[in-house]
Every structure is written in C-alpha cells, then in structure tokens.
Length: 310
Image (cartoon, rainbow, N blue to C red; front, side, top):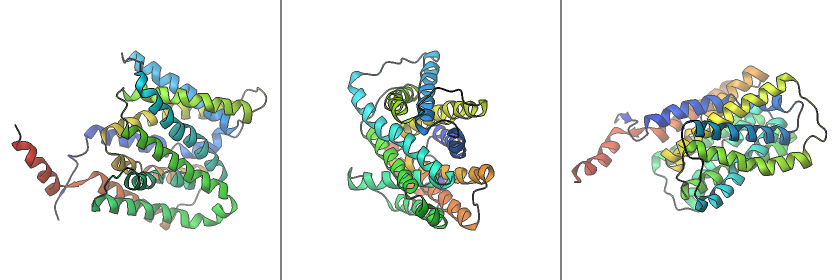
C-alpha cells in the first residue's frame, strides 16, 4: 500500500484545524448554560456583536484594512444569512431541545450537505477517496443518531433545527467558495458577525427577553467566553481553512468537532459515551484521514508534470 502524504494540505491548515476542533467541540455543552437566564436570541445577539467588534479591532491593530470592495457585499450578506444567522439560531435552539452532543452531530452533517449540493448543483466531482470519506462521515452521524431516536421522537423540532443548521452552514460556505471574497479572514469574519448581529438583534427585541435585568456572573462569563473564543477564534479559523482547501475537504475537515462535543457533553452533562459513540468517532477519524491524506503515488503523479513546465 502506498504511503500517505500531507503535502496537498498546507501545514497552516492543519494547525488551524486542530484549533478549530478544540474550540468548537468544547463549545456545544456550554449552550444550555448560556441560555439559563437569557433567551437564545439575546445570547446570540450579544455574542455575535461582541465577537464581530473584537475581530475587527484585532484586524485593525494588526494593520489590516477594514474596507471591503462594494462588489463583495451582496455575496457576504447572503452567505451570512445562511451560515451565521440561520446556524446560530437553529443550532442553539437544537442544543437546548436535545442533548448538546447529539445536536452537534446533527449540525455537523454540514460536510454531507456540502458534498451533495456541490455534486448535484455545482457539478463538483467526488473521487473514490472523498466519496468513501463522505460515506464514513455519514456512518458516524448515523451511529451517533441511532441511540437517540427516542430523544428525537420526543423533541422532533430539535432534530429538524439541528439538520437545518448544518444545511445553512453548507450553503453559506459554498456561496463564499464559489464567489471568492479577497479580503483577510479576520476582516471577512468580523464583518459577517456584525451583519448577522442586525437581524439577530431585531429578533432579540421582538422574541427575546422582554425586560432589562443583569444576569449572574456565571452566565456573563459563559456568554463572554463563547463570544471571544469559539465565535472569534473558531470562525476566523474556519474561514481561513475555507480559503485554503476545496469545499468538500474543508467541510470534511470539521467532522472531528462533534467527536470533541460528545466527549465534552459526557464530561459536563453526563451525556452517553459508550461503544457506539467510540465506533462513530473511529469513522470520523477515518473520514478525516481520507479527506486530508493523499497517497504518495498520487501526489507524485500530480507533481511530476509541474516539474517539467518552464
């Protein structure tokens, strides 16, 4: 069997992937804690606003221009509606209605949606290796869902919202991948978060908490952490990864996040973590390996012609 190589994946993408997996995976068990005293809409409105301002402040401090060419605003706004607005509201409600680890699994069906949409609508091809990776990812999701069918039957809205979050994320990512926005990842992410803050804040005024009150310091700490770490760092890592990798590989690269979410949910909330969950995690690791590792023979074959070009 030919050895595998990571030459097709920039080392920086692997570092960003490791950070993304950690900060997003440990984020999910915090959702129920974040909305103990405030509504989902209020929580998300505060989080996206704080995260957006923080990212743009960091970008400015690093000397990056905050300007975005006018031609990109339509693309950014539409992508933000699908990814950040739909994802943030649907995923949070889902994590409240059903166990957070199971909600993460549903949300991270995103790679499957992205692969299917890319193939059916955009004409993207899936080679055998990536097709097997998608199938393994689907097997992992199925394994994690099977023990939870009773939970989904009792809270079907949680199931629907989890899947809707994954679909919205896939569509938003594909939009940005097809119509590239050539600005730094920090700037792009910051503006998307601020754009998302507008409709979410309106939703908070209409559907959120009806009177002013000061939450406990525990709730403030949880919301502040989610805004500054998973939302700031995680989203910046994600959009940087999307800029470096093809859509199908970028999507599959996030498949380890629900694994971390399941382990975190077991630690924080005592959610189930048995043989089925571990088998699903093995499928996730195999899928990620297939997506990111390229056989040495294939890499050499692709590199050989480029060496002769002058």
